[in-house]
Length: 246
Image 1 (cartoon, rainbow, N blue to C red):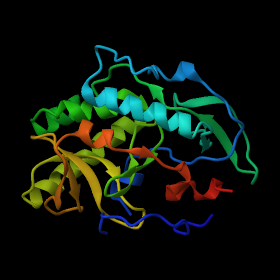
Image 2 (image 1 turned 90 degrees about the vertical axis):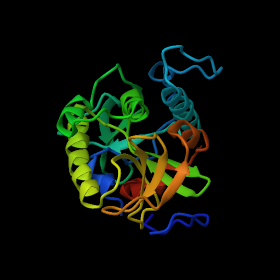
Image 3 (image 1 turned 180 degrees about the vertical axis):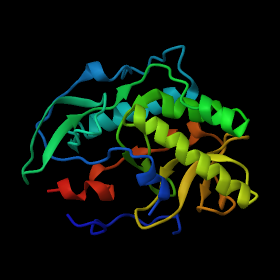
Image 4 (image 1 turned 45 degrees about the vertical axis):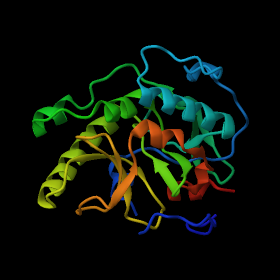
């Protein structure tokens, strides 16, 4: 299916997202046989909460479990130079002759991805954003929010984490020029929009933003509140996955 040809419901977002490609998150899916891998999901569907999980990690884990239940057949265009702990099995040829590999979101062990950023900016990074990026290795996941479509950004591998920090340093400089509070992006909106979603570092609020400008408005008072309102949507809604949409 060609990019932009899929119709969506009306969106309250207004306005491509610079964070989408800059983060390097691997985000393409295709049709493969159904394969359930409960060992890759460390979250119980009974809702039993692991005591060490933060509110963000808890809510995000519920969403990831729902996503894999709804869309269990995830594949990525195989890149031998961009491997991931998410990859399952060996690459193979898809229906169009494209080499693909199966993948699943994988729980991460604790990693202090933002220590270098905190040192560079001389300020602590909000614990919600640390928990968000520190919880899962994953490709991007599509979702419906009350205001419209969102594409959640995740880390595909260790190099992706380094790239994220580099991008956030540039983002911080743009914030200084705009005389706006520092925030950390975590999601894109519609594929034809430059607007993105971020966590305001000082308060933890979820903001709707445009690159280089002050925030447009508050979307949610916290990241757990925002994540709790999401519904999984087709992975093919991401523009980089159109090549594998049959």
